[in-house]
Image 1 (spheres, rainbow over the protein chains, first blue to last red):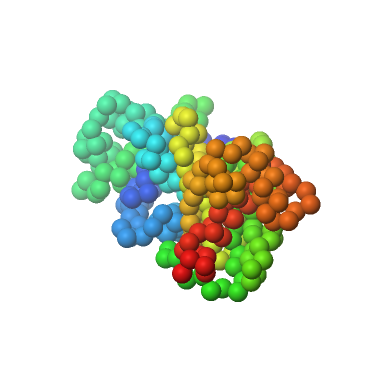
Image 2 (cartoon, rainbow over the protein chains, first blue to last red):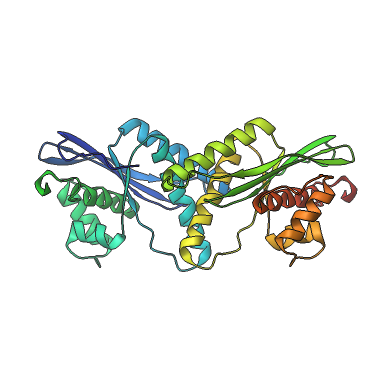
Length: 173
Length: 173
């Protein structure tokens, strides 16, 4: 899907997604004028005893509900860095597929960022640990408490990273 | 999803799926009494210029239509043998996710077989080439012509493999 010109939107909503089949983090960030705020964040956890198909169905339904509710202009998805073994890579592929499918169904464009790029956007360094990412995400969004768990703050970092993408930022026209 | 007891069904319909994001083969086989026949076979090919999400959406919609139309009692899915590189493994994960998701949505149980097991079920050897699999699938189903392409005959072989699964075959009670 082609990226529409979103630079001049008065109101811009971006949902960041940290994909996983056990825990999938999400973080929705809105920009109204010059102000950026958290709209929603958390994670989807399929029931532990559910099998592969039911777990994917749970994630897909949750993602659809998220898109339906917040109607983001854009999804910011963690670009896969390949997992240690083929089995984990396969699982990441399955989780990513749920995000790409839901986005395609709702006609929401997807931008992807590696974990390094997302961390750097928030902390200034690509090697920051998850605690630092969480703390700086909270500072940046003016949150009194640090959101839990890390899957949610990682997703918020992805959304903030997209907010600053030159392709979206009016200052970079 | 738990496997229901299908051994005593007078009529049993199994859809085999050979998963891929560029070409996904399907083969629907029915057993009525002692007779096994081909119901449908072919492959889904997303438009070549479509991006990741649209390709997955195409495959998912095609799979839903297949399940809706043939209402199979069971899906027989090729168990992933891992691809040569992580990128291909990721793609297989995405394609498999479409099958598992559609099956979960329609509450159709899924059995998985490795390519070796599926080949052996049809040819007697796990190292048969795709031409031999195609010829013997045609013989077994009494087809005047060998179905095309190999993705379709591989999918029919998967369906036939499941038809003979001891968990489904009344002779093995």
